[in-house]
Structure formats: structure tokens, C-alpha cells
Length: 131
Image (cartoon, rainbow, N blue to C red):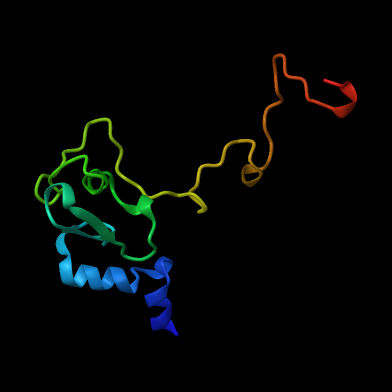
């Protein structure tokens, strides 16, 4: 059953068509720190670029330098033209949504559900007020 799941479900890795195309036509360009492998096929306007994820296929796991290459913002991949981080840039981290590390604003239920009272001209709507 495990082999059939890997072949026919995209969320468990590359499908059969992607595996065949990658093996026949893909030229490996490089790998990132997450273990994702980047490929290309063709050149110029007909060039195709894709990634085989190491683990769960989640687009936010692509670091910024590879993201710009994937979307053809830059012509050369980071393996050929490495980018230098700017002074103000923070190190890349994957999307933390749905994890313990996710941002929780002060009024969210996961952060205790307490928030400051509304101030100013805010007035809660009630059906009896007829507003």
C-alpha cells in the first residue's frame, strides 16, 4: 500500500509523472539546506524549473534565494551566483503556522483569550439598537 500511496498522491511526494519526467529530462541544479532538490529542463523562454521536496511538499520550505530562481526573478541559481545576505535580513525560517512556534496575538484563544478593552468610539452592535 505504501508504494501506491507514494505514486498516486502528490502530498506524499512527487507523483509518478513527475518522477518519470525528472528522471528523463531533469538536470539537477542544486540542493538547499532543507534537502530539497532543484531541477531545470530546457533553456530561454521554454525553460521549466521545479523542486522535489525532502519530506512534506510545502512551498514555504523553499528559502528566498531558491524562491527567486524558481520564479525566474534571477537567471542563475544560488549554486552558480550565491546571494549575499543584507545586514538587515534575518535568517530564513520555514512557515510556523499550525505549530507551537506560530505567532499568537494577545487576544487569541491559544494565548489565553484575554485582550485589552476596546477604546475610542467603538460601540458593539446589538440587534435591539436598530443600527
